[in-house]
Length: 200
Image 1 (cartoon, rainbow, N blue to C red):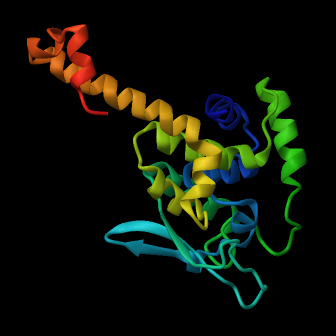
Image 2: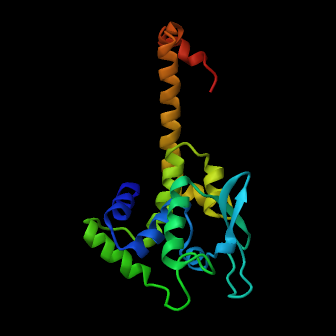
């Protein structure tokens, strides 16, 4: 999924859709969070720009988890915000102005898929790709769960367990590589009958 979503974002040139799609790909925001995101949500956390997903009493928006969450912004997400500022201004909502209707993201995604030559990607796939990419890059599943705003890590495990498992395999492969680089021959001299004595 991650490769197809990246291709979708990179190939599609309709600036407004691209800005929204790239931001979700970088932050994992839900569609409703993207729609309700305001400039007042942009804050700083330990010196890094962040977006604070929070309740909006004016519109009645409440985050799906019911709690406020903070997502630190990558350099790419910050660059996307600058493009959003050029398109929609720096007051009110991040990704649209109130003079025009919120776009049909399903239709925009379908058009983008056709232009990029990819299939089976919906707008929510960009959020899923963000989580998958974070896990594959070594971010702990508990942290990915918090970034995505899941109420508990069990939800994240159900949707991303396979990616997490493949990451564990790559961790062990790195350990093997470190051992090989140290020329630690003890690891290669284990006899088969001694494996029975290794505690599980």
